Amino acid sequence: MLAAALPALAQTATPASPASSAPLAEPNLAQAPLTAEVEQTPPEPESVPASIRPLVDFQSSDIKFSLGDLMDLLRDRRHEGWVLAAYPDPKTSRPLIGAGFSLDLPEREHPQTDPLNSHAFVEPSSAQLWQAAGLHPALLQQVLDQFDDNLAAWRNERHYRRRISSLDPQITDDQAAALLRIAAIQAIVNARAWCRDFDQLTGPQQMAVSQLVYQMGVNLGEFSTFLSLMNHEPVRASALADPAALPPAETSAADVEYWRDVQQSLMQSQWARLYRIRATSVIALLDPRYVDDPAASEARIAAVLRPVRHHRRGRPTLRTASYHRRSGRTLARKSSGSRAKRKA
Image (cartoon, one colour):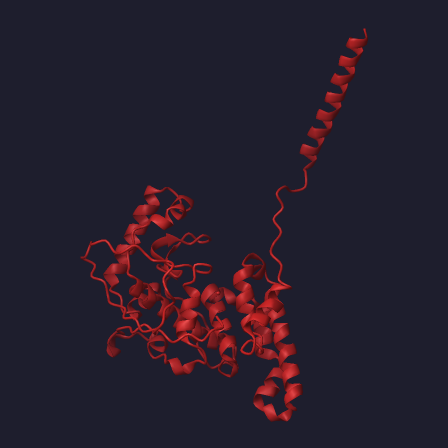
């Protein structure tokens, strides 16, 4: 939902003309991984609002992992998916496109409440992100209008989702990749705002936190234990401040123990139990030994993280239990009466 180092992405995101009504090619969900970083056409400098300036100014050198790797991960069908037409979110029913890009979110206030973290959260509107990705604003309105028409025609979100595989594409692969790129950058920027030591993390650890932010957004704040451990562990803080303060072996042992606690805080969450496969891959990235043996790191998490048990039937209620008891007694009386009649 990653270990392999893939080259970074270079597809060009070309703004679509809203006047064009020619059908697009059917989406190829089994296509090869993205292999180069999407080259977007950013807005003119004077027209860039402050809300998206950190996203436009992002540089690949700001992180220790490949942005292309994260994009390949997020467009995987086993995780967010890849749909080239608007479809309803299974939980909120709001319109999504591509790899789960939200189409109608307003700009939001997200204050930084950690006095020890100087990085601000960036929460622009969907329309601002759409433009930051280099797509024409009129295309967004066209996509939203078609979504509303489909929702009205198909009555509810459940019927809509059944038709996802047959939807006509509304954007191209390159445009969806551009949206994914800007949304992934937003997740990275906000991951730095959630995590004080983001710049000191390993590449896989940075990717893990960024993916959590991409999936959960502001709701990551509900993972209070995870965030507390990420930001307030004294052993980790001292080791980062002066790695030579402890012998290498001892530093390594403390690091492994610390990150085991961080991983455990996520493994105990409902998210990890409901989305076990995705959670296993994300939580494994936090292991400081992941770079040396990704498979072993994932195996350690998979061995502990068990799927949710789905019970087919709940405990019988008093009413149903009484009904069955009465039915049993009635059947017994009828059987006794039948035997008596036969003897007579």
